[in-house]
Amino acid sequence: MYKCMAVNAGSSSLKYKLFEMPEEQVICSGIVDRIGHDDGIFKIKFNGKSHESVLPITDHAQGVQLVLDAIKEYGIVKDLNEISCVGHRIVQGGKYFSKSALFDKDTEAKITKLIPLDPLHAPAHLVGFHAFKKALPNAISIAVFDTAFHQTMKPEDYLYPIPYEMSEEYDCRRYGAHGTSHNYLAAKAIKDYLGGKPNTKIISCHIGSGASLCAVYDGKCVATSMGLTPLGGVMMGTRSGDLDPSVVDYLCDRSGKNVDEIYEILNKKSGLLGVSGVSNDTRDIEAAIKKGDKRAIMAGDLFVRRIADFVGQYYVRLGGADMIVFSAGIGENSSFFRARILAAIAPALGITYDLAKNEELNHKEGIISKPDSKILVAIIPTDEEVMIARDCYKALKGTL
Ligand code: ADP
Image 1 (cartoon, helix red, strand yellow):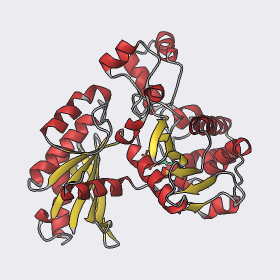
Image 2 (image 1 turned 120 degrees about the vertical axis):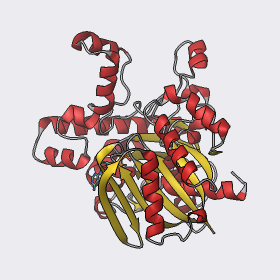
Image 3 (image 1 turned 120 degrees about the horizontal axis):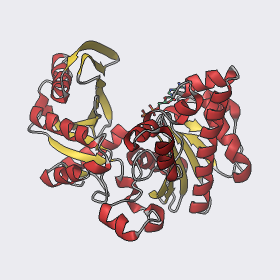
Image 4 (image 1 turned 135 degrees about the horizontal axis):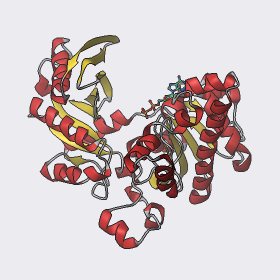
């Protein structure tokens, strides 16, 4: 038995989940939020109990110390040396990583080299890694990449039609994201719903405030909607998703804003929030739609259209589909948006679905298509952390 810590370090937050492996039992979980603020937040959940405190949290190192002190104080572990491995979620693995890797000097150097591709997250991941390394010098560390699952894409699926020399020289191509989630969903779909059969065709829809779709053939990614960065693909909570590249220059020209300001808008003020002017949260959008708010209705329609278009694209890419999976914040919890997406794709794809089941299964796993549907449709709650813990276990066994 090993205790493995799955860590997701963002620029001002650090999420963590401690597992007993290989049982995959969650021992505790929580978040350190608002790092760098006087009103930082520390949360921990264990044994059905939860504790929260608000205090100044200067940096990630202090955040990590808070987590480890609490784990000791609450008797969750007797000795911190019981934690054998720390697995770090890394957003961008570029072309270097097609699977998880030991977080050694070489991995660190590659992640550092990839900072230009992910200036938002990569520095925070490295800070999180060093903070844990210092606090738990005896634990091994691994890096688990959001992009790794997508490394099986063919050039026709990942290249942009720009001069090939530029793709090569600047590593400018589609990398995708949410790979750990898509990998989990596809593996679970194949094992639990498709009888472990080979050559299965799955369209995996990870729809949260960040959203991406993935076409999976025989358990491997063949195409995914996010691009060079997580800004591409479908419309999201605050991100635009795909645009004509001329939009950036045109908006700079017309608004007098510079490129950075426009990208800030495309990342943080677009998507559901930007179109509706109401919120980035589907709960608020749903409420506004029900009140007849015109811009919320438009935002909802656009959101559904963009997702439906990608489903259609991936249906063609895969030459059909055995299963469509809904997951993440919206995919798991919003029966309203699931029903709308299904309404948009069902006639073309021969899907029949059960609206009562769709309601009933909110927040739960299960099938929402009818027995006569040509494609099985299911909700599967994602679990990126358990994937990280599984790779930690493999690293400890020397089979990573
Ligand atoms: P991320 O991991 O990308 O931050 P999540 O997968 O947690 O995002 O998804 C968060 C989003 O899910 C929220 O912004 C909201 O739109 C949606 N959401 C969460 N809970 C519910 C719910 N109970 N009903 C409807 N939508 C929900």
